[in-house]
Image (cartoon, rainbow, N blue to C red; front, side):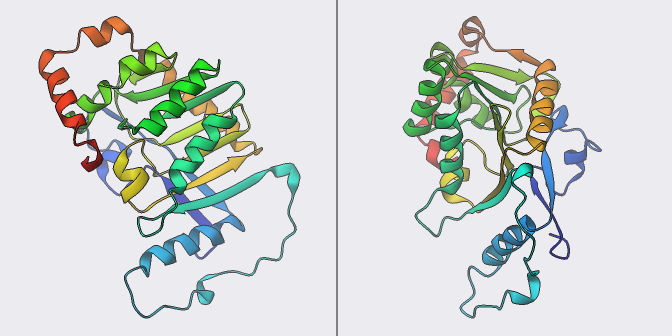
Length: 257
């Protein structure tokens, strides 16, 4: 957040590999959004709450907030920042993803660096695909953590058999956390499709509805898709025995990954 007027969120961290100045896992594909206006106030509040979460003395937030006096402009849609915390009982990031999957009519396109699913999220993804929704997931082809990638591959067969299309980004590593649906709904943020991110971490994101930026997010997905290869059932069968065994064993401790 900058002066309460501009905010950023997404997968991009502070490091040379995130801007491809240093290559570690092939080309690093990431996504972030910049917001301006009243929505930045919500993002600022999320930051201050995380900053102050362990303090007994509560700071006053008012000096960091701007006055909200503008009228809503429905023709521009809605931009809603959201946050997730392990200190409460609401899994907001998961709820946003489930909402998009359950309300899609045509398609849901996903980019995620990790795929470590509980039964609920796995069921939501497969149910959406079985209902006729086009569900596409872009994963890395060159992983940053081999063990997380091994676990992710254990979900491939069940997802593909349910009708989910899985692609791997051939040039390198996908670090983007993106859901986009039906040309009118999208979210970009820090929330991975894994246990730790959905249930144990501080995370945040931007939910966008009926705003022109959704088309830009979908365009970015399609450009990434052109550089990705589709995973088939035969590809799964060709996975090395070591990776398959490791994936199955590590899946038993997936909530810790």
